[in-house]
Amino acid sequence: MEIRYSTVCAAAWGRVWHARVGDAVEVSAPGAPPRRVVVRTTADTGVYRFTPMLGGDHRTDLRLCFLPADGTARECYRP
Image 1 (tube, helix red, strand yellow):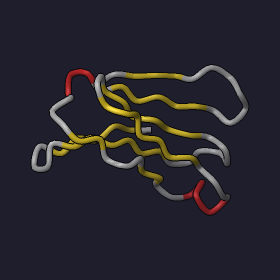
Image 2 (cartoon, rainbow, N blue to C red; image 1 turned 180 degrees about the vertical axis):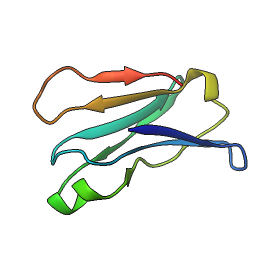
Image 3 (cartoon, rainbow, N blue to C red; image 1 turned 30 degrees about the horizontal axis):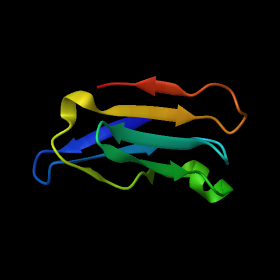
């Protein structure tokens, strides 16, 4: 799992790879709706899956969360 930020377009997004079907990743920042991607198929487990981009200059307030399919607690990180 990784958070990405582009200074060119002032957007952030999350990505995940080697996740299990049903796992999800969510990128969020204050004042903006979170963006999420869910691993839907076994084909998704072997490639990068990206959240939609989150626009704005939120680099210091970004949060990336991993939401496991098995229902265990989410794990969140800040860059």
